[in-house]
Each structure stands twice: as structure tokens, then as C-alpha cells.
Length: 234
Ligand SMILES: NC(=O)c1ccc[n+]([C@@H]2O[C@H](COP(=O)([O-])OP(=O)(O)OC[C@H]3O[C@@H](n4cnc5c(N)ncnc54)[C@H](OP(=O)(O)O)[C@@H]3O)[C@@H](O)[C@H]2O)c1
Image (cartoon, rainbow, N blue to C red):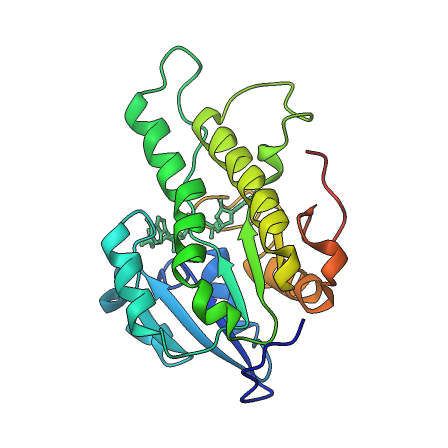
């Protein structure tokens, strides 16, 4: 569905958690040159990411902080937004079952599941005013329930599985408005989270995901995809 508010042929993209000076999948998004697009990137600490700010507008956003989310929504309220990429995430293998703290579980759910939903809800007016109405949630193969035979990564797996369910729910609710909401796994990426031993560079991961995002059709809404666009098992 086309928005009535078409003002430009450029895509307007907002990305969360994409300004870390360290290599992150997020910091690679703009360096891959999302062509003909205007990006707003956000970071918990934009003052530490000044070098990257040259590439796009940079806003403060802590996805675990309601006030920070509301403040971003106010600052960009007058701007249409075509694509929202909820990239921010936290996670590590964590302790074995029996030793996981409540705090660790809460923080993982707060950042990985509640954060993307809260950000998407807050930015809905801007997305409704955009041309693409697309929400891309960075999930993980570790979120797959049917593929989980080994355990481990307890808080991370559970919070990303919750994100998948929330993505599917968001997709169902917003389908009639022409939204496309997907969960996508970037692969095992050489970032702070993925580590040096990972198999994919941030640039290659982002390039592959961008191709998928560019080709999304309304019938793709609610899908859980790998970086090449293949369906992942729930
Ligand atoms: N790397 C992988 O192999 C892999 C695999 C599957 C899925 N993923 C997913 O891909 C996404 C990007 O991962 P990555 O590998 O780039 O991870 P990363 O290297 O750990 O970077 C995560 C980014 O999220 C930001 N962030 C964390 N908490 C935040 C918060 N409360 N508010 C705003 N930003 C926050 C971090 O900002 P700070 O710099 O301020 O901490 C950082 O920029 C994540 O959602 C992750 O779960 C990654």
C-alpha cells in the first residue's frame, strides 16, 4: 500500500544500535551505502560515534529506556520513515541452566524483545507516513525453537524467540495497512557479539540482508528469514 504522503523517491531508514565504534553488524549498514537513502542512525552514546555520524543523521536512543524512545519519536515526529531496522541487541552464551540470573533474563528481554516493539510502536506515525512501511527485526538462528537441541544461550535464545513471536504478531496486526514486518538472522557475523571466529563479515552480512529487504513483498510479512532470504524454521 502506498502512503498518501509521498514526498520524495528517497528511502528514509532508521536503524537502532548502529553507531558503535567497534565493528558491529549495525555499523556496517550505512557503510554498505544504502543507495539513494537518507538514514537516521541511533546509538545509546552518540557522542562516542562522531566519526560515523558524517554518514547519516545520528540520534540518541537506548531501546531499553522508555523515555529515550519517546524522545526520539518526538524528535522525528514530522518525518516520514520508510524502513525501520531494529538492529540493537545484546547476547552471549551466558551461564548454564540453573545459574541464569533473573536480571540477565530481564535485560535480554528488555533489549531484544521489548525494545524493538516499543521503538516500532513509537515510530508508527512516521512509518505510516512513509512509502514502504517496512520493519526489519534482527533475530537469530538461535531463536529457533524447533532447532534447539543443545540448550545454552538461554536468555538470548528466549528473548529472540519472543521477538520472533512479536514480529509475527506485529505483521498480522499491521498487514491490512500494507506493512511488511520480518525477523531476519544476519548469520554468524564477525562483530563484538559474534567474535573473530565468526564466518561472515559485517559488510557481507549487511549486503545480503539489504538485497532481501529490497526485494520484500507484502506476502513476506511475518516471515523468519536468513540473510539470503531463505525461510528459517520456527
Ligand atoms: N553477530 C552475530 O553473529 C549475530 C548473529 C545473529 C543475530 N545477531 C543480531 O544482530 C544484531 C546486531 O548484532 P551485532 O553482532 O552487531 O552485535 P554487537 O556487536 O554486540 O552490537 C550490538 C549493538 O547494539 C547496541 N545496543 C545494545 N544495547 C542497546 C540498547 N539498550 N539501546 C541501543 N542500542 C543498544 C550496541 O550499542 P553499544 O555500542 O552502545 O553497546 C551495539 O551498537 C543484534 O540484534 C544481534 O542479536 C548477531
